[in-house]
Image (cartoon, rainbow, N blue to C red; front, side, top):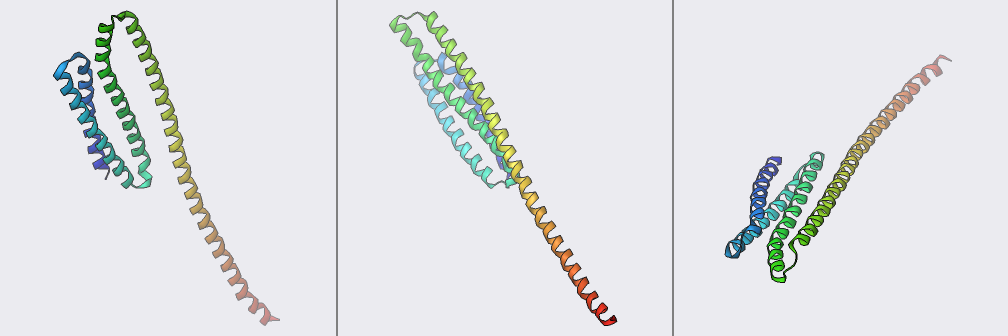
Length: 186
């Protein structure tokens, strides 16, 4: 089962690498070339979404003991997918901003500094989000470990109680066997 997941991971890596390459080229193109590339990237993003759904289904089929690791990997891929979609949106807007600035005669320098400042803030926000997500993932994994420990403790408690009951039964049987022997000796 995990081999299917790993095959999906390879497909995901290949597709996202292609998409990243194409997203980088979009702002540099114009006209039909740009439109065609945008449509192509949009189609590939849809393929990635379908691939993520398949991966999600695979994770649900994996035994609970191993599921946590695959869930965290899937969550990471979902984050990567969101980042790709944002980059794609930005790359399409980047070209339209250049055209807008040219038509309105705005100062490109201030626009670029604002854009750089905005991108810096966006990167900081994304880093913070990744840190929060990593912390959340650690909490989820800790919770899973805690559940496993509680299950083991519950199982051990039942074993101890069964052993205690057996000892009591044996002790009562031993007393019952000794009681008639004493009674007959009197």
